[in-house]
Image 1 (cartoon, rainbow, N blue to C red):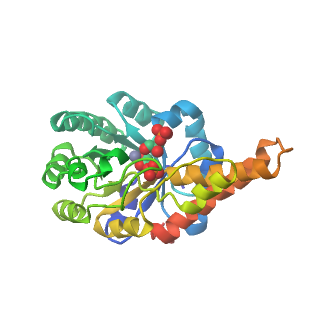
Image 2 (cartoon, rainbow, N blue to C red):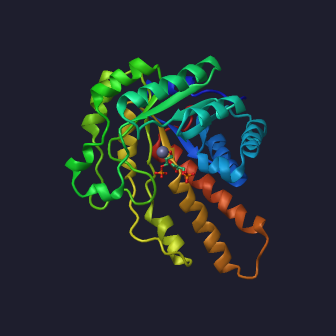
Amino acid sequence: MALVTSKEMFAKALKSDYAVGAFNVNNMEIIQGIVDAVKEENAPVILQVSAGARKYARPAYLMKLVEAAVIDTGLDICLHLDHGEDFEICKKCVDDGFTSVMIDGSKHPYEENIALTKQVVEYAHAHGVVVEAELGKLAGVEDNIKVDARSATFTDPEEAAEFVQRTGVDSLAIAIGTSHGAYKFKGEPYLDFERLKTIHNLIPDTPLVLHGASTVLPEFVNKCNQYGGNIPGAQGVPEDMIRESTKWGICKVNIDTDLRLAMTAEVRKFLIENPAEFDPRKYLSPARAAIQGMVQHKIKNVLNASGKR
Ligand code: G3H
Ligand code: 13P
Ligand code: ZN
């Protein structure tokens, strides 16, 4: 049991039709809910921390909470920086003891993305840390009206192959139609599987990463709304599309929004049903259990990762 890199997890996942769940963490209850699920399912896991999560929880707390999760569960856990935007934050996380960092240079021109990614790879590898980079832009829902226009920002397969070769990056996040948050598609959900297959065929040894992979299950949106919420017209990636993607090199699937919805639905329900209650432990216990339930569902039914530890 230790903090580990994703190297072995990805090497195994690449050979088979499953993916490692990468779940975003912000506090103790989320971490506990995830690792309880992972232990129950005997699955590999990546806990990922965004810049926003780092700011909210403060770096030392998150680090110690994840170390505590390793001790408490006996699991191997990969601790990953999600969407690092510059060299400095990646360096800080490497220095703090993260085992994996993402440098997200996708907003920069191609050559700048390469230069930035190379710089992070050089530093991280020298410290035994692995690196994820991103090429192509995840579309916003407003770009979804015309698939043609939207796919202009998708990852170019030839560029992806050159990018991996020139940067020495360990895994690559690609854009094939997903986006972050609860509003991913206005019309029919669409992922460019032909593009994914082409990328995978060109770089079969590179683990690919799918961001924006929440499904936004109606059950949880409805539950939030039933208990005083007002979440309009949310739509995520159908679960069968996520499962399909694991056949074509997707080894890491990022999920945050679905955890937020599951947790918030439970807190809303509890507070509406128990208006006189004000002990945070009372509403955070079912919220933590909801995280566990959602993560077990993902591992078992979407990622096909049960028993793959
Ligand atoms: O991709 C972004 C993750 O969902 C983290 O979101 O920046 O609000 O923490 P955040
Ligand atoms: P979702 O918003 O679909 O959960 O995506 C999370 C993500 O990609 C984190 O990097
Ligand atoms: Zn992301």
